[in-house]
Length: 112
Image (cartoon, rainbow, N blue to C red; front, side, top):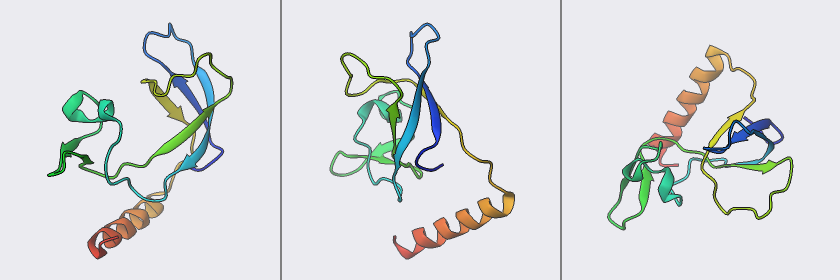
């Protein structure tokens, strides 16, 4: 996935209405903690997470922040809107996936 990729957003209860969007940013590294409580599994979300000793939600796996910009403006724009996003991306070869997983494993073991 990369900046500029096309995506589509559908909010729950939107009667099938889909909003086109474009990826404007993708985090270079996995985020250390979730700032969206509603996304965490401990609050009914889909991201497996646990609370650390400081009470912050730490994802159990790699989670990358992706920001999208809608094709059209909303009145008013909600700060957070739950829903489902589909993002178009190119398929990756098996060799490419093995390489990326190996690099991620080595970086994780090295403490990055």
